[in-house]
Length: 196
Image (tube, rainbow, N blue to C red; front, side):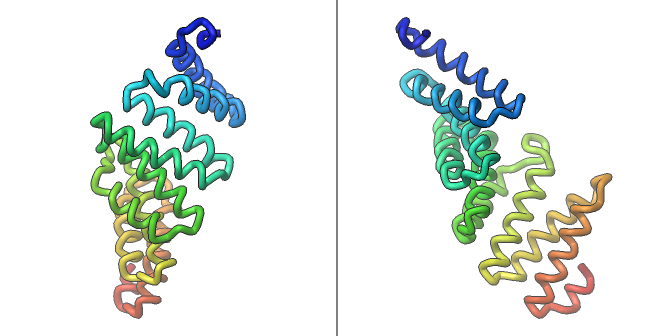
């Protein structure tokens, strides 16, 4: 209705809100449709940060439904638009974190590692939460293991374990310490493996 009336910018706001509501209600299909419509109708009107937010929402929707290739494409777009809008260290870092995860889920280990390593210095506990930092280190460890870089993988898992050590739930800490010990064992660093 808004588009037909020559007011597409109103359609973008409505569709963006609909995206959030549909996600909240667990209707991924409706959320995806609304996000795509908002991007289409807002192409000429949105500020870079608006583009970034919509691309990131769509990436997360697609990722949640197992569509990791398209999710990675939209996370990359979100990263670009966030940087363009001066939001690189905040929204851009989160988009790169998500992009790395989507690449990892596709088995694109080297690309994922490169993206995650670029996101890591920008992620902060205050802005993104320490869970995002732990997850990024964890994913980096997974990528580096697949690439045969066991020592580097262990370093990332140990850094993640150190952060998770302070969490009330200790499952992640224990799992990360175990992964680090295994990686150090594969790297033939047995004394360090026993210490981990």
